[in-house]
Length: 60
Image (cartoon, rainbow, N blue to C red; front, side):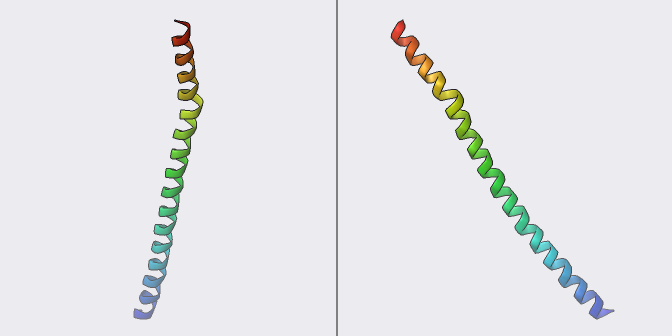
């Protein structure tokens, strides 16, 4: 029984470590995707808006 539980504990520990690594990878990936979306939003919304504002100042 003691050997069984020792083997079980080692197996659970390995699964736990693998899940921790997977969680870190998923968190870093989500952060990178968030940064990408912020950058794209800036390029697609704020830069054209700034161009429109600059053009309207020239006309006014």
